[in-house]
Image 1 (cartoon, helix red, strand yellow):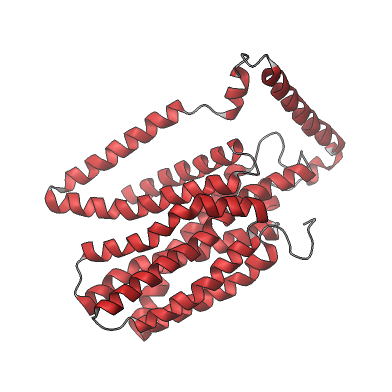
Image 2 (cartoon, helix red, strand yellow; image 1 turned 60 degrees about the horizontal axis):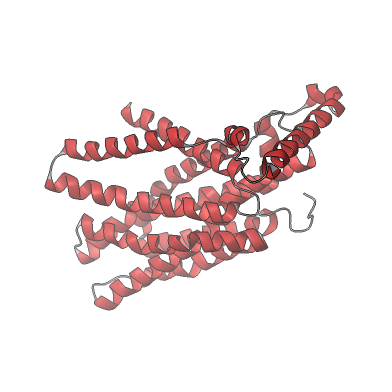
Length: 341
């Protein structure tokens, strides 16, 4: 029951946080912002289990929860400090000669007028207006982003479930040594803001599709890590570094594209979601997709490795990555053959 409540609370924090970020950052900077989000996520995934394991070994079970309580307390304080965009607009500094204070509210008035005008024009169709979730799910562009999210989660959790067991089997490594291997996957996440900035300029399509294609050889080559030598260990670390880099090429642009899907729909029809934004619903679907992938990943990796071996697990994951490059190339950033999608 505790794990269920933990999952629910984490989902709420994750969804609301991404929605707040999407609502605050401009469309031309959302990729860069999502790059920083990916850094934070990667560091948490790495240092959470590592720090928890060290504290548990050196102290006690209760001390691990003490760290968790401290992090949660810090998070609560930071959330009280946050000033939301709609509140900030009321308290804009007027020391700049009143120019910005006068301009921004007028822009807000114009935007609200557009929404009200569009809503008035479409009043006859209000009964036919689709639910927000249905509207979002009818977008092939969003579905491609959600599929990419599911695959990324599946690949990540498949490795998290099988890599520690495999290195223990062939190298007799402890859980600490196996945990340090994941550092190789996390280091490329620091390129997230750079990748996000590139995505802001050229769009997410070719970054995401290229990332999936790059994943293929690195996962297939895992089959060559099969005995205990220094060269084999260096090879595995190198493969994990490129694996992390390839994942980063997919995750950051895809997370940004979810925001852009909502913005583009509102731009075409300001009344499509009513007076409220749909960022929370969009990132709720993102969170659901990631959860599905996280559930399937350990099952995929565990069953195939047990039944057919480490090498087979690698090439099947590579095959999935290669196939996933197709919807990413066609629909990420908008349908490739229809820019007005």
